[in-house]
Image 1 (cartoon, helix red, strand yellow):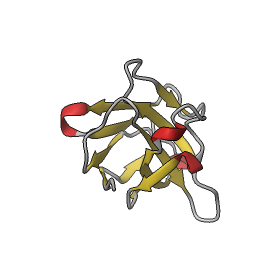
Image 2 (cartoon, rainbow, N blue to C red):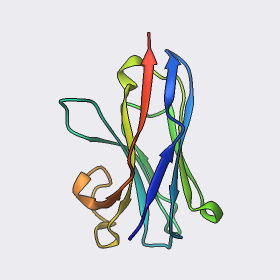
Image 3 (tube, rainbow, N blue to C red):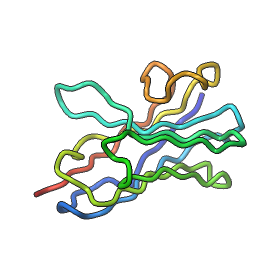
Amino acid sequence: QVQLVESGGGSVQHGGSLTLSCASSGSMDSRDYIGWFRQVPGKEREGVAAIYFDAANRRFVHHSVEGRFTVSRDNAKSTVYLQMNALQPQDTAMYYCAAGDPKRRYSPWYLVTNYNFWGQGTQVTVSS
């Protein structure tokens, strides 16, 4: 069973930056992938970004954060990062990282059902 721990959340002003980290208890292999999701009260959890540990190093970001958010990984540390720049108030949410089910690694990255281990979340608040 994989354990994930997010960190790096906080409060920033409009236009500020934060870097979230997602540390995994286990090492990753080419079948693995990590997704970042966010959720606000009363709304469904939505995919923000994902990164795959395959040879292609596939990365995806939601169109609403494209050009502002970047996902990366450090294999040696089994850690995935979400660099968030030019933050906007609408980015305010609880952010979660999740480990994908290897059997579903060819399904759309943003599907919550593809992920079977979740971190506890880290709050990001952006003030105007």
